[in-house]
Image (cartoon, rainbow, N blue to C red; front, side, top):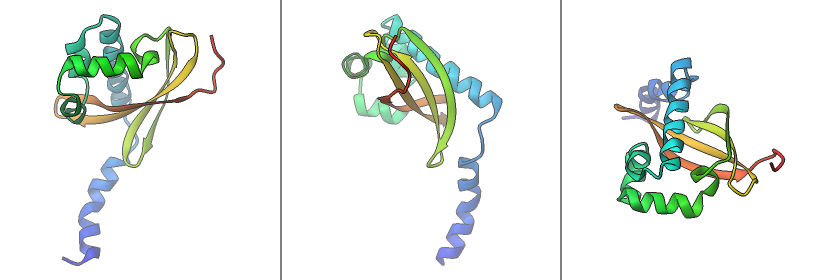
Length: 137
């Protein structure tokens, strides 16, 4: 099949990936992240792991391994003092929710949650912490 024809066949898929998020998507993404943050607060390994995407689940294998990684590598996500949802942006065809956190040490961090739509609903497909421009608490 010529390259031009393949690109035309992919056009609807690419367009769907970059459509702006609907209000219901925004609300569902926020609920998904809030549910995982609440599971972390309760130390509910199974509930937190269930919200991760299939790829993340396969990578860590068990809820205990996933939670150990979060505890050691993501203290602002594991035990935030405050949580502020900001922009939901599209990057490389994927939705990324920005969340400003104040960590347990009082230092700000910006969490970038990459989201994945599955038949069961929105799942978290990754979280990256970057420096925040907000002042420390």
